[in-house]
Length: 326
Image (cartoon, rainbow, N blue to C red):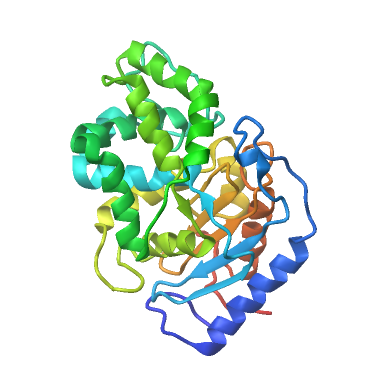
């Protein structure tokens, strides 16, 4: 079964994907390794047994298994999409002047900033995402939160809510992010009020989705910006290529090399346990499992993506298309 686009609806294909998702879910459901992010008290209360997987194809068909009704906050999963919106509304030149595209080799919350640098390494680390948030604030002013939230709602086709408890928890305990944005203000990378920039960034992190929403967003990227359900071109192909390129090289932080070898897909994780991987032209893959590994990625999410990439021949450097051998 060849999954190169376009992919038509096919019951046997749905059954095959369901089989693989269920098989991976069954293999990993009892693996409770990892830890919850204690530095965000609200997220530290998550149910470690929660485990859900979802695949959405470029034609909008979604297959999912596990605790799919659970909602979770985007956290750093918001970063590719705030970057996307900045590229789309502020322009490539302005964004690339403010934020680089090089892997940092550091954890997501690194405070490694140098006087000689005029911009953060990339938009997937917290420093870069804070600068992107500032650009969206400059573009939209006080309406920036509703503009971004509205974009998610239009793409997903339903209301997207902000989790006020998570937002408040992060505002109260986010001393490291506060240090990063104030340091960037000192270095001239941030010009606006650091507290306003931080609050907006954390508002984006506190938006809630389900695993099927995340896989649909992945399918939007997999389909070169064409909406999987409406067929409308929501994002330009040029912007999608830029976002996926940065996700591939920087999205998994200081484990990006290992991820590139074992999974080989553009990806992004969030400390709420969400993980998104994009197989260009094929599908969006999302996992939700709250316990994190030492790099801050979902422990079971990483393992599930490794297994599915191998089973479905999704690695970008694989010489085969997806044959779907059971």
